[in-house]
Image (cartoon, rainbow over all chains, first blue to last red; front, side, top):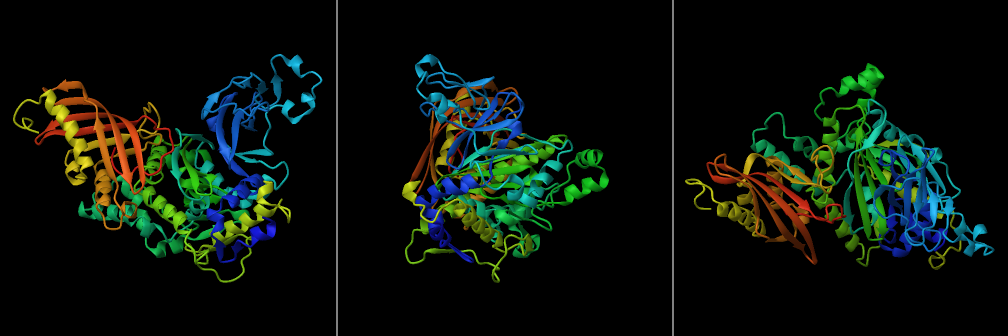
Amino acid sequence: MNAAEINALIEPERVHRDVYISQDIYRLEMRHLFSNTWVFVGHDSQTPNKGDYITTQIGDQPVIMVRHSDGNIHVLYNRCPHKGTKIAIDRQGNTGKFFRCPYHAWSFKTDGCLLAIPLKKGYENTGLADSPNGKGMKSVGAVHNHRGFVFARLAEDGIDFDSFFGDSLSSLDNMVDRAPEGRLEVSGPPLRYMHQCNWKMLVENQTDTCHPMVAHESSAGTAVRIFKEMGEPQPRPAAMQIIAPFMSPYEFFEDMGIRTWPNGHGHTGVNMSIHSNYDAIPGYFDALRDAYGEDRAKAILDENRHNTVYFPNIMVKAPLAQLRNFIPLAANRTLVESYVYHPVGAPRQLTEMSAMYNRMINAPTSIVGHDDLEMYERAQEGLHAEGMEWVDVRRLYTGPEDFEAEAVENGTTERQMRNQFNAWAKFMTATMGDATSVAAQ
Amino acid sequence: MTGQANGRITRDDVIDFVYNEARMLDEGRFSDWLELWLPDAIYWMPLDYKQDDPVGATSLLYEDNFMLRLRVERLNGERTFSQKPKSRCHHVLQRPFVDVFDPETGTFQTVTQMHYVETRLDEQQLLALTVTHDLSTSDNGLRIAGKKVELLNCDAAFGNIQLLP
């Protein structure tokens, strides 16, 4: 497929089903979209010491994020330059001062540089030293650590970090600012939830404000009913704080507002959100005030953004210090990893609230998650129905939209989904010639 | 469950209780199952292997009476779309180890190895479980004071686990 054919899949108010169900499109996404954009890798508190590493994926590419001996984070392709063996497969560990391939003992510094090869004289005058395979483990194109959050761009050249994210970094900043010490620490392993659907359905759902009161009536609606039957005891059960707001009426979500930024980023909860009405945690405001002063502390806590999408494939909840990573494994297969962070200096009770939200909403055992996954998987199958090839994203569409400008709109608009597809086409085709074919990938 | 309310609890009573609880779940008698729980009891399913902090890091489940009731009433609800059609489950139990047996204080603990099968439509999954029951005597006989379900592959990526392992 060439750029024109990719662009033909995206119209202002609808998208072709192939963006969800075509494995050929998926392969192009991995080669282009996930190479040209800045993709989340991990948090630097997962690798606090020299030699600490995690293994993960950027799109379909296996990578290692590692703390080098100079203290900097490096992101390397997880492939021995010799035969292709993955250098590490445990999800996290410490490799000491160097990686050593378990197959033939080629070894590498933690910045990827070749350190040693056994019986090296066998490579004399073979040209290995001048070949890419003789240089060591290959690094990704670029790495950026934004206040602990590590992103990478696979492509050697392309848009720089600040230009790509722009003002959208305000959500990540608010999440970090909510820690009195100005930094976060990962709190336990992520939930890992397998979805038999396309990764973009999950990303779109983060700003889909017309589904909670429908899809989640069985959980949130039942919670509200039980609470009433119990005589509305105070303090209310913890679950009521977290699950009940999903039953808020359409007007609530309309008033919440949606903001979009260039390059596919955006968030729900401009004016307030379902996270605005949580009970205050004793000692938390005092700790923030001591760190920032009264006015700044209030300003930080007054921002209660709901879901912020960082295009292409993560979402953060700043008030709850959460991050969800939607890892695309195939056109119809997505691994969701949901992390909780501890805002350093805040009461542990805050992190307990985040962990509670994570297990109640994002777990494979969650009564809320069950209904979301049900919808995605039904859509993944339903999209194969012939006779209707387009998916509709025109809610509150009023005419041509300029996604290069920040905008704030009614909270039930699907503008953020259109913004994502605008960015999708942009970064899919940025380095795609007119004659690019799937076969050539 | 004879002999619980009016006499001393025997080891067989404790073991029978564990089998009967699994049978209730397999037969879908969730409302009856709720009656087995003491008011302050917690159902915990850790996310991490050998996890020691259930609430400071994410667990798969950490549910009090309110959440368990919500879970059961949702399963019975009209608009529970992920349960149209409904799931079914099946427990196979090894004989429980009775690790704490103290009729004087009414305190008992069992550890039971189980295979748990859950199915819906064309999908079926098998989970290997280590289940710890803390049981106490009440006016109604033995009741659950706490239940911990450890999955052998807790660190794996799962699809939906919708019923109660």
